[in-house]
Length: 305
Ligand code: R1P
Ligand code: URA
Image 1 (cartoon, protein in one colour):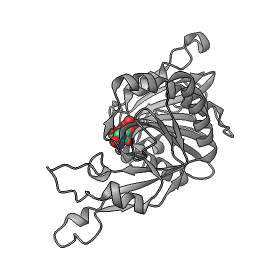
Image 2: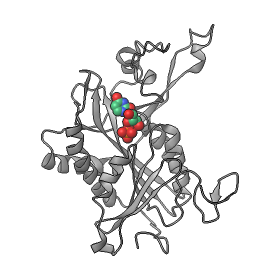
Image 3: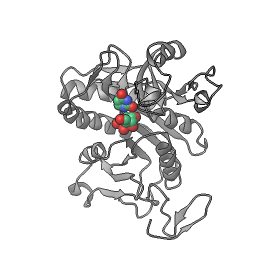
């Protein structure tokens, strides 16, 4: 951060740039795709309208805290693609700080990767969950005398926006059937958002005590049947969208590429990712521009005008 910050409650610099994402008003659109990986974000940004449409290149900003924002138009509609890195705190930074920079309703789609718990969702398939919940490690369980407490906590389910999810599933089905061989789109199940790639996703690691041997195969299917995907951000997004002030709503949906199949223990190859990411990215953009948003407020002097 180059400039002095004002307001300790919600820090911004003198230009109005938010503290972690680094953007200011006019640099992010009401329609947003969020991903973990900045390489994926750049791949999707390549699909945005070129200078021949608006006479300017796509806006790009890498913040000091590792958020990468691209803003431009897709088929003439303003959109932003924002890479946030990994984990639920990054979702919290993203949504709160973008909210402070965007007037009116927000539509946001997370386009991530996941581990699949569904034998029918193999590596290279896409999942569109109807809702998401969190799995968090109960630190107390690991204290002496507390091991009768459960080691992992399951939240209740937070729903995806049904309209945005339907548009997303339809767009993925249409685009991927045309572009990639044999990719399936799995809808209607749940997504589990874990606070670790390792312990809370049931991966064994002899270097640490995790008490997670029964987590994925036994406890999770009993606690939350119908779970298709395990990843690290979506429940935070759906939860915070639900908590948004209804005067300024946030509509959130998600799709995940299956990178790991936890039933068969397979991992996706880089060649399949190279094929899938741009094709699915295009489908996500197409769903995002279709959703109706009341009172979209184009900022004066915004980077897409
Ligand atoms: C773990 O490898 C990361 O991959 C998944 C998880 O949610 C976690 O962020 O999503 P992204 O590929 O979007 O980062
Ligand atoms: N992302 C995750 O969080 N878990 C996986 O197994 C694969 C991708």
